[in-house]
Length: 107
Image (cartoon, rainbow, N blue to C red):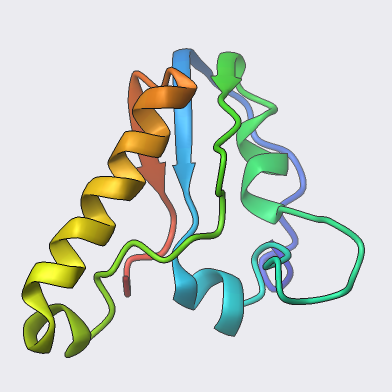
């Protein structure tokens, strides 16, 4: 968005979508405001996705909570990582998401 200067997208996607905001995307790439930063709220990904006709982005209870799938943590702390992942999925389900999407291929 910042480098490619993409500000408009066109298309249709009908459904309730949960947006997975990876820790890397939030805290390193600064694609949205993470809760620990005291800046005005923003989310570059949802701004683009919201332009699709028919899409309904659902609101998560904890939108920037870690999913547990971060590098060696997921291997060294497999049980904790799995529970964190289950918690993230449960948050999307509770919000009514029919589809979960993400943007950060490094996550």
